[in-house]
Amino acid sequence: MIDPTPAHPWQAVGLSRNLRKKPLPVLVDGRPVVLFRDEAGNARALHDRCPHRHAPLSGGKVVAGEIECPYHGWRFQGSGALSALPCHLGDLPKIGVPAFAVHEEEGILFLARKPGPPPYAFLASGPETIAMRLENRVRSTVLDVAENILDATHTHFTHKGLLRGLGSRRYRVQVSVTAGPGWVEAVYEGEPRQEGLVSKLLEGQRGKGVARFLAPGIAELEFWGKNKLNLSTTFHLRQESPETVHGIAILAGPRQHGLGYVKAALLRPFFQVALRQDQDILEASSRNAAAFDRPAPVVGPLDVLRLAIADILEGRIPSFAGTTVSHVMEL
Image (cartoon, rainbow, N blue to C red):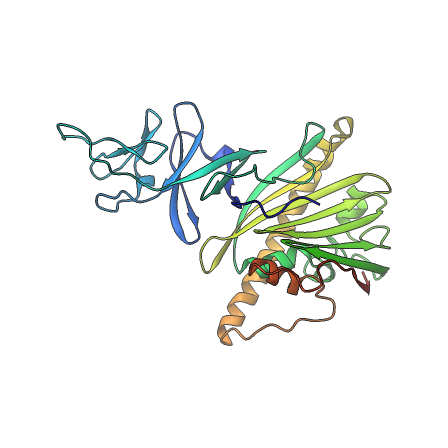
């Protein structure tokens, strides 16, 4: 099991390909942060606020690897230290902007309050892997989005015909759920394939499926054949603002001597459709809950991961940690 709780958890805030010559504004815990690249090409991140008159630094430009404020031209290094104050004569005052630790891994930009162990990117990362990266936002909560990703039963309806529900056939599935500090995992066995278009076209025979949640906000699915991983999907989720969840999705699978590229090209449009379907139902549910003063949702007998995910997000160890909880359902 991956260690999901490093001393200083990283948050995935964007894709490396989107950080080029211009500053990139993002929200972290509801507050603006600006990313830019220094002269060596390293990603840097500061609070997106000039301490002089509170102008957003992201509205300025990058000059010699430093961020320049658009209001009075104050310039700051990647460390946050003031490096230039136009029209001023003499020594620079010791003024700075709070900085974040930045790490780039597998084409993803990660931020942390302090440096720590390298972040976890996705399960199948490596030279023999093909990976696609997508970025998305949805009006919801991390709890609801993570459970939606990892929930098997909604696929018969929200993704009918695409992931499951193409036919009426159901399989009796054994689900084993285990948990520990900062993680919970469900293993699904007994479904030879999903009865949906994507599985029929691309997956082949299935050995097992795995649904996993890792702190601080990683939802991950694995689809295994008899003895090898066919596909993994990893979602880095964070509550960007009180209303919005930002997500970075990574689909990864084996190269298979080039066949993997063909599968990836076929899978991408299907995956984008599925993302849109999930976004629509999550946002409709969020709006409807607000109309009824946001009552607590009912936790049903098939919601095998929700309570554990809620515990992890609140910093608690899931109540059944150290044991295995078994369920049987039809999928």
